Length: 75
Picture 1 (cartoon, helix red, strand yellow):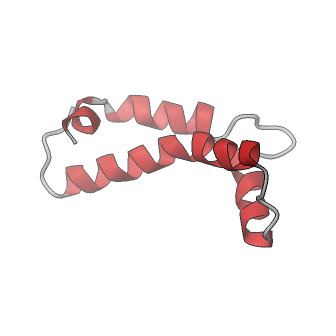
Picture 2 (cartoon, helix red, strand yellow):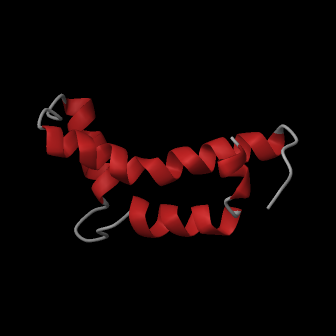
């Protein structure tokens, strides 16, 4: 968890905006993959990898925010 504590919050926010939402047109990739997951169409390995790839910044940001709320030292 120390690795996550060492990542600046600003960097995680930028990663969420750039990597998490790219490509922006016609819709963010994470939205497309989540829609596929809900509809049950997320079957190909590349689509599953893509979901994890675009969701990773959001997961790290949530973990960082939870740790900051529970008293981890801010960076």
